[in-house]
Length: 84
Image 1 (cartoon, rainbow, N blue to C red):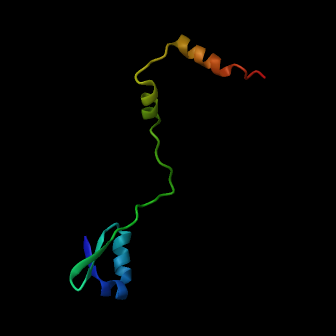
Image 2: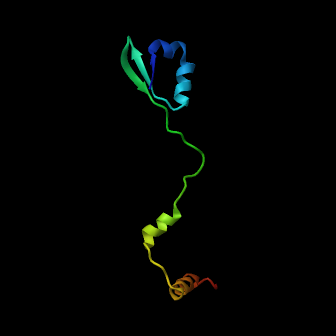
Image 3: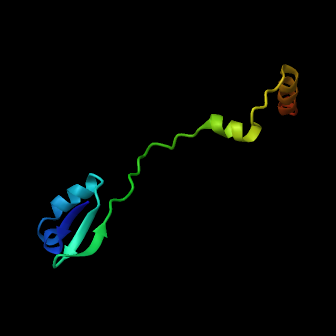
């Protein structure tokens, strides 16, 4: 963890901001004693979260394996009423 004085914040904030941008925490000292701590915000990317679909299916169905006949019955049930 980096340390900076109150005077550093006032006179050289760019350096402290660079530390925060790099993900470092900064302890602020006033008269040599710890006064505050600055922490960077969590990085927020514009990319969507990776979803583990396989894990979701395992949570719902477990290790269940459907037979071809069960699968056909489920598909037929889903298609009912689609013929307009």
